[in-house]
Length: 321
Ligand code: RUB
Image 1: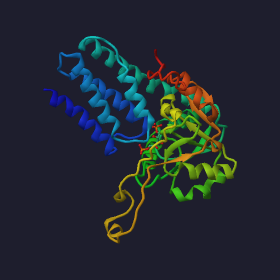
Image 2 (image 1 turned 180 degrees about the vertical axis):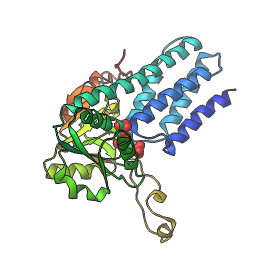
Image 3 (image 1 turned 60 degrees about the horizontal axis):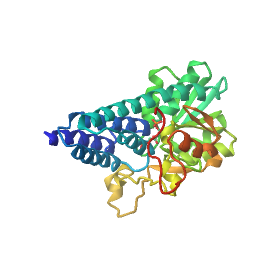
Image 4 (image 1 turned 90 degrees about the vertical axis):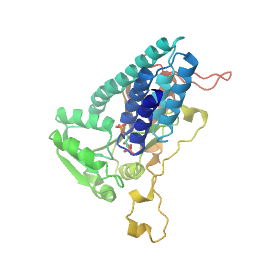
């Protein structure tokens, strides 16, 4: 019976690893939903056994992809469940998972509204990869009649840019697809760059799809504002305690075909890169549009972490508590 339950988690983990479920927000929501489904179907009577199984599920999900802190925050949020009996614990898991999913849903609405205020009428905007948060800004600004054209990068090697152009085109939003190496060529035509985030560190740096930092560099050179759309669960509490963000390196097969790989060459395929805070004009979160320097406050106020005091840190994000 519980082997069947474990399948829920193993299959979810596989979907994240193979990127059937991808993007920091989607992964986080999916992890919360998976923990909920697992808890609901667990057939145990011993509360300690329940905790053990939940920890196994949490660890299995956390071990899928290392970079997006949204996954860690989602798992941590649900795993802060309470209760004495198995039934109470289950109820608490379900409640927390539902709250997290609601957090994801409502955050996008606010981010869209706040971000759109910073887009001028008649704008051409550029985005990279496929970010639900960045697209919520673009869609809202378009609805308000402010966006004339969206430049979307292909986003090699996985070409998530195709998802972006499909999504925008399906809503009738004018979009131009470009290869990643054409970013600087077109930057003078751009009024604002809008990207999403996998992680924001305590010092305000952005970790996002590989190529983001090159776009930020080109934007700075051309004095084009660079906006990051990031829900507060994309901020990393761990970086407050000195942890470095692990950048996922994916397989060489994503980059080159077999005849090239057979040449016995090295291939490196980092999935994300780091954009220092100096390149970021604003981070639009669901609680406001903030400078990157305010990242620590977000981690403290929204996620409930403060600098370590007397060996204690709070681990329960405060959002809905
Ligand atoms: C996706 C990516 C996205 C962020 C933000 O990378 O880098 O820009 O995750 O997306 P991958 P969202 O495709 O490798 O997961 O705003 O939807 O969370």
